[in-house]
Length: 363
Image (tube, rainbow, N blue to C red):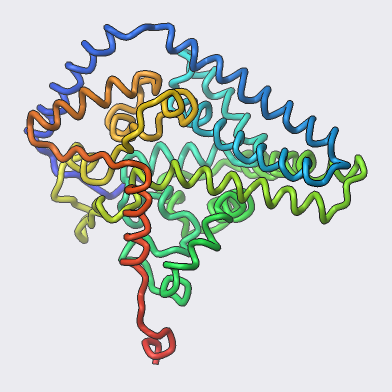
């Protein structure tokens, strides 16, 4: 189950990477170690906020509007936990000891995801082959929206320029109830190229999905909330979280200004791994307290892909050094503000929509 995509071995690219890494080591030496402790505090604070909001939702469940509002807030906190804790833990960047980072991933399971399959998808596939059709499982998703031009055109893709406004708010619903199950049970999923899922993981996945369903839906019903009210609250939670999540996850890769490289029939790419990072990833111009301490530094995304083992608390300074180096040596560093990046994403969606009449083309 070894990967078949091979990057062009470039001595020049390797030289640039070594030089850049050396410069970043000097930058990191000048930055305070205490920032890592601040990141560790998130491990305690965000889950406690999640629990507090959940308890408040149960406490005020008789006030339907408040109940809906608090569940919507749960959706936002879920995404914040993912960006600030889970994403760093999967790269062993929260604690020094790997077992502690691994232990943190159970939080993701308790939030309805599956830490085992997501770690495989993210580390083995997305980080190695971002924006490559058939390999980047983070972009693959459910396959409803046509991101890659190689994807088969469907009735949905022909109308995706407006259907995304219906499908995108269902992103987390798809992740929790469809995508994970497909990766576990469907043979043709991308993840099956790089791993064989142990039997125990099937039981863990079903168990934690059940736990999530019990406390999100079952417990409020037990305390007297009508089932339709609880189901609507859960839907509001997932829609709110989806919109918030996609505003952070879409801009760095999936847009019309980034490349989607095509390996040849032998799996060879005519670019180096370093070039691949620059042409498939952009930063999002945003440097403030929110981006540093709330958004998980997803906006400093090129730094993360080039050096995923560098703690995200140092991403602003690391990104500045990467930008400086890229300008010095003519590398293709790009950064857009959030609204422009989202516009470029929509531009990609429109470009990949097939406008021909569905029935005419099939005749």
